[in-house]
Amino acid sequence: MAPQMIFVNLPVKDLATSRAFYEKLGYTINPQFSDDSTACVVIGDTIFVMLLTGEKFATFTAPGKEVADAAATTQVLLTLNAESREKADELADRALEAGGAPAKEPMDMGFMYGRSFADPDGHHWEVFWMDPATTQG
Image (cartoon, rainbow, N blue to C red; front, top):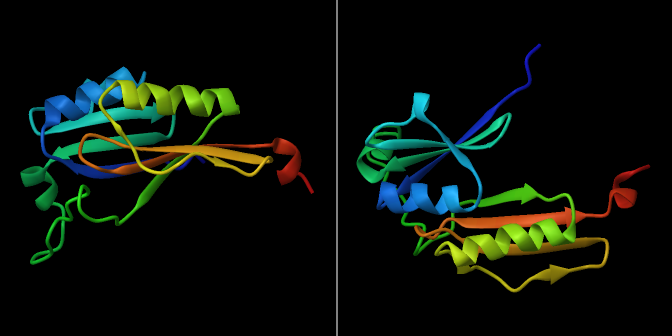
């Protein structure tokens, strides 16, 4: 059986700005699933973020439901793991350098460490590292 994939669909105000932001984080765009209203960001082998213009995103939602403004509301927290504390810092720092904004203060619990940022549209991202010894039985 093939591994299950996840496609996170996010509405964006300016597709070019959002696409450039994620490329500056080191991710690639899959042109096969991208056009003038959509950009498919490849996070990993089985993780993709579909950046959709607001108009395009609205075609996928249920009739009569408003599309949330991520700059004003929080509907979802998007979380990625990192290989180390340093890698968590690297991704969060790249996000801030690329035009993102801090979302929360860093979290340091010793065995777990995390940083957060908001992308140009206000979508809240978390990146964390957890000591592998804490997850072993």
